[in-house]
Image (cartoon, rainbow, N blue to C red; front, side, top):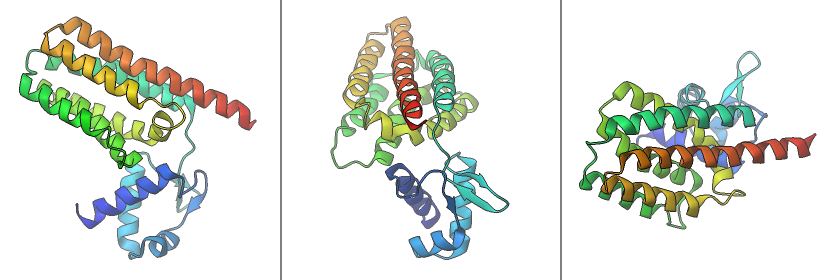
Length: 214
């Protein structure tokens, strides 16, 4: 991993961990001192994180970590359910035992207790991506990848208070089983439910916490 990518990942990890607080302005000089790098790599990392939605503009020249909101979470899971099911449909018939075996290995690695939230989010996406690549639809795949980058900002809830890890892993395995048996329709239905149920739970949780803050 190059130095730019490493700094971007470090910033993402600190955002998920709450080290960089939401709604608080971030200054390049402060970040430069925190991560002991010059302002140029900080500037470049900020540009990347803004493009990916991890940071938003604040004032004339500053940035901040955006507050997570239930409406955004709802939009994300609804778009994912629609586009990922379509992508899987394109992949059906091209998914072989080697692809499924690779997806199973990635899924199993998610049980490692040493993983950070950021690593869990990346691996969770890779489980799905390993199946979707078989579709050979790069435009649709890249759009879905962008959505999942946004979803990773919410991983602290999915693997924290919502305790969704075991359920997610089990549903992945069920999906692999259906794909191995070539039960295409059931596989797409399961994927849709997998995304929507987790999404609804997250939205309801965010609504509740938002009400408690009022």
